[in-house]
Image (cartoon, rainbow, N blue to C red):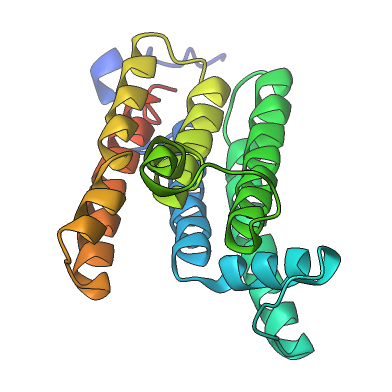
Length: 216
């Protein structure tokens, strides 16, 4: 005698709290956010600025403080690890391969450009503006707070195929004038770094959420 299985009621079907695809996108968001934080800390704590200044000072025969080779290796290792975390996060998430590749290129090229600009700025390797004329340049091109959040945010939104989420990138504008304004206001470096780090974390979180990591 053949037994006919009873149909399963839809209400009795249980679904996992976190589906694999959704968990993968969330893990991607966390990795990009933490990697961006590491990259930001490497640029803003002076590690890469010292390496860049020392490198371009040697190339351009300008006097710069010497760094030990083990210090340079440590600073470079920090930056490479931070970049690797961001890129791994971008490739971990779902999305078109082209978007992930382009996003990774943006992060690497953006980091390299920031490294070069900071080094040339310290050693006066290019005819950069000086005095009051240098204020707009310093606020945008020599501002690692703005630059790092910008190119990591653009890479994330590009990978996530954001639509209206691109509006969140406007939040980075607040990071343009603040570093220079706090310097002119004679706010201590520790306090200004804490304020800028907090604002960068808030802006970065907004950009991550704008990419809707729980969407799929």
